[in-house]
Length: 459
Image 1: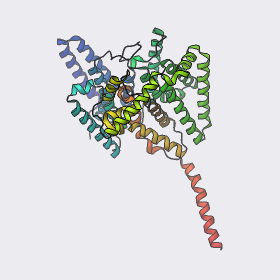
Image 2: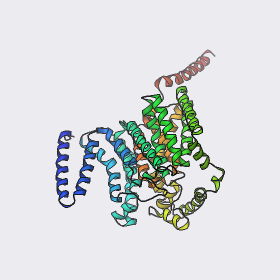
Image 3: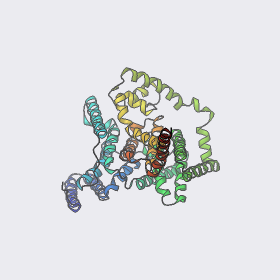
Image 4: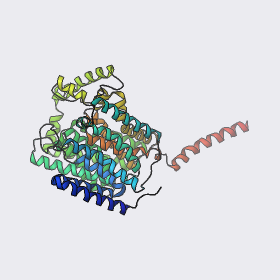
């Protein structure tokens, strides 16, 4: 199958850019400028080759779409149509460019086909329930649907080129934005510029392992700085769910490194923990925040009591409509707002189950299932591959946050989950026991068999 040369595609895109810009400039110059900037950005990413895919996802995930400093969740500062266009373009444009230029092919998979059919069915079901495309856009479910699209598109980029660098760059942007937000309002939680501080914490947790690996490959000092800086960001976000996620990630990482007999990996984790403890204890503001958020009154806080109500309500609703739920994204949030002072079910798995049933939940947890499969395979075989573990641990961290937060209704988290899960799904079968280890484990078996036969013969 022949494909167009890249220079021809660039020329055609430039002509289309000029024609579109000229046509719109006649009616509304501001729209023409916005279109030209968008198309220029698309072309720039497309010319980056396979590295464009993770960078496009990373850029959309960390752009400050919401008011920069706030004390509560507020609507985005951009129109919903602009947000949906960015969400759709992030996975589709690099994927289409790769198809046009004859990039790396991915082996067809029955599981991928079934996943595509599942998300297509959910999209049709949601559209039928809402009745129009505009309603589908306004209901803020596009991120969930394009999380599945991102997963499937990411399978074409299984080599993961540029993914670690994109994660590092995205984490750096989140750090700079967080520092700026803190300097402007030191008493506020940071992270409202991505929608909410817990969203911010989930993104930091998800990107951190891949960013740490990128930094560690270049300098241990840089990796230490990334770890310390990320810890400070998570503390200033005051997102306890992300703190729990970090603890779980560290426990799993220690278990995997110990199972693989990797003393150097264990030493790096211990060093990171020491840096974290020293940072918290030696910095008054950080110590004060941790002490306040983990104080004795935590069990009577509004968030804890609301979660108790959420679990009871959600389980009752799921028992009534287990398979397809209410068939209305956002239904559980509206019901929670009517019955309580918080307009959300503080558990992403229960929220999706209420709104779209167990079928919707199955679609949502596919990337998480891939990560758990990778972690289980590594534990069983005694492996500790750095790249695969960095992605699997990032997904695991976001999955833990989802236990306490409505994560699947935040497009940034969906895109990052889809990116990491899709790339990881192409690498599961590569995780095999090293040949030397296999021979060592097989040799005693052959030896035992030989002795048995000899004993039988001698008798």
